[in-house]
Length: 94
Length: 88
Length: 317
Length: 94
Image (cartoon, rainbow over all chains, first blue to last red; front, top):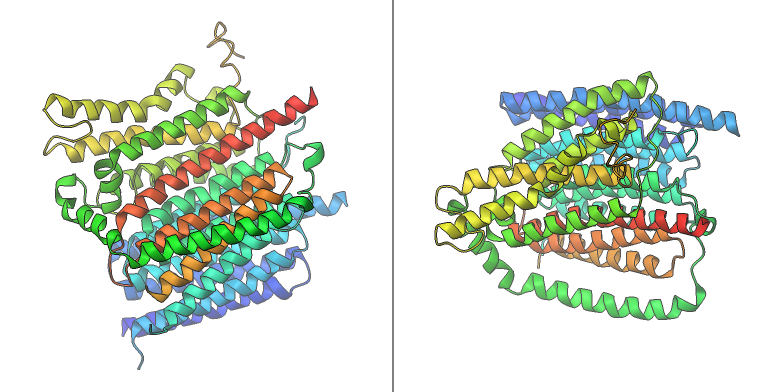
């Protein structure tokens, strides 16, 4: 049962990753693409981590996976901001 | 009902396809920031792929690799966006 | 050969890797090349994971994706007249290069097929696995690095030291960065200690699981890079004398452990029975610090300011 | 030979040739340093593909150890090359 639930989570996460990638490819400018990518991919990773925790079984692995997810969220939130500011400064110069 | 490994492997392939789709943006650009975004994409998507590979190949240490990749993606973002010093 | 979904995954990874390499190398915009090269390093780490080489995946995640990229990004700031653009290929060399490439590609293919199909590759692996129990560690890669082929690793540390001495001799460090904004500052204060903790974890776990001195050293170096990006100056590094000891420490610990064996009527670098595990941990700790400081000083770009003013040591403002 | 080894072996060979070609015909030193790194990655890839033994098998640790030291030597050599390049520019300016 937990394995089935886990695989459902993983399949659902793929939809988010796909949305992120399509957004990155199709949206008109850097800021819009940034927004699509970081939001969708972090949610996708969260679902995937939840699925992997259910499938992988033991507690230590689950804790590590959770740590990875929190770290990615924190880092990509700041990285997204830094890239957006970088893009804005370039916009002012040109 | 298909077995777990096939399902995870299919998920890994599909994930890689979405990563490739996103990376097209890195190749066509046009701006430098678009290319930086592709590193963000490979960072998050790479962590996801490492977790899947860890489950598939039964190597738990790949979760450690995912942790390191997440940390270094942050270092890369900081290095990429740091502007010049005033008198350099 | 049965074709499965795994081979589809492998092909996609390989094609993506080649695509990134091609676009990193072609084109005249060097900044674009460097950013794509960083993506290339990230992907390479995933490929090591796929090929069941987690030790390499860890090292590549730290070095290929982070350190090399950071070094190259700094180098982009050194503008040279002829180098603002990547430059057009020299036409004269083209034909000769193509011929050379064909020759090299043929010999590469021959060497590769021989290596994969002949049985000699299996013999060394068998030796390594057969003696794993006596090596003092249970991670086979660490056993090869620090025990079976310890000579190689000792000399590798010497190469690293030589490269660092070269960098130190070539000039003084780059100007430090300005104080960072709130966001970058927060990133630095959070990520640097995490990098240090994970480095310690990898050093410890390297005895029985993927990890070890190289991965840990690279992560510590990444911490130095992060602090440097956050405005660290070379005054905040340890004292010059201590830096010298740390740089040479990896080799020194290795040599001492090697000579210890000769007092027990063993060969150089042949660890006494029962002591291997402890000795390996001590060597690895010293090697980690050497590697970290070497790569950290490489990121500074030269000898820290103040190193040449020996008399005024300790009195810098 | 396994198909996986063939795929990554070919990729390694192509990377090696691609990198070497760029290293020879490019004028910019930085582009050459990049190219040598790509070329080296091709060799590493071939080594790791040789070490690969299959999905369930533990691979040969000897090539892994060689490549691990190789990665670290490559980054320190790159750093030395970049320092030389910087010194060269300063010498040109004088």
